[in-house]
Image (cartoon, one colour):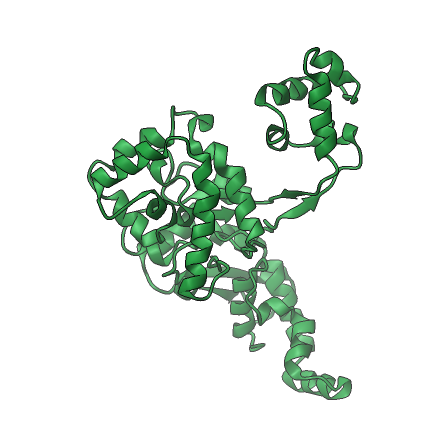
Amino acid sequence: MRKINYPYKTDIEKEIFLNEYFDKIFPEISNHVEMCEEIEKIDVTWNLKKLLTADFCQLVDFAKKNNVSNLNSLFRTGVEEKDYIYSKLQRVIADFLIEKNVNIKSCFYCNIEYVNDFKDKYSSIDEFINYAPNKLLNSIISVYATDRISNKRKSGFIFEKDLIDLFPNKGTKITQKLNDSYKDEFNNEHFTLDHVLPKNSNAFLSISIFNLVPCCYSCNSKFKLTKEFSINNNLKSIVPSSKDYLFDNLIKFKLKYKGTRVENVKDIDVRLLNLSKIENVDEFIAIFRLQSRYNYHKNISYDMIQKRKIYSDSQIEEIAILLKRDEQSVKKDLFGKECFESSNEPFEKYKQDIAEQLGII
């Protein structure tokens, strides 16, 4: 629903961004030699760096090559979630996107829910021990120690002094590590990363940056879940991480009036139209249940209708003159800046289309 605007505008800036991503990921890959050898067997023009940083349409083409499935075993050791190399690197990838100021505000699939990151700080070591997420503790102490603490939490609040009893041999060392860390500010991402080409069948693309889309929990784990996009030439126009993204131009929100008068929210419906008639667009709308989800939020359209009744163009002009401001800024205050600006705020596309229909823009 919204294109991911990565933090580059020129080819040089893009190259720097992708080099930094590769440099962040590469040291965490212990079997990179085997990966490179297997990739070159498939296509001598490809290497590990290209696999991790190639544009989405290139990834689709690579996934169609012969013997690519041989790569899967190098990116996972089993079928469980913890067996994927992605599981080890998910935190690293999320932190990289945050550090590079990728504009992650709303879900790139639905443009409904906020998924922005936020800073978190703990007031005491005891609060940190009891409420820090396991993945954060794992980055400071061993997985074994985190599991022991997590199990202990189930029986009640843990105090710093309890760690000595919990870890007779290493309690002092673990306590010191946690004390050294809890005062820091921690990034908390509010998003999940969806694999456009699913990692269960394309594990070799599981850490390719343009195969990853920051999205809300609902889109990833409730609606998409095990559903897969149809892989064809149209997909590159629909995936938010693709440089050829055109989805916003392929759909349009439209008000449908049930009668001649709008007295309450029940008098309207919101329709999501596929302007292109491309099947992938219908598939995308169906997978993420966008028609029903947006119609549920038709109160937003109703509020805009009511405001439009009150503030005609002539009245807006009078207000602008009275306040010595331009009409555009007055409209932003009345109807919301999302109707006029694209900065990945929730409901942007929806509000802009409805505003156009109401003659606001």
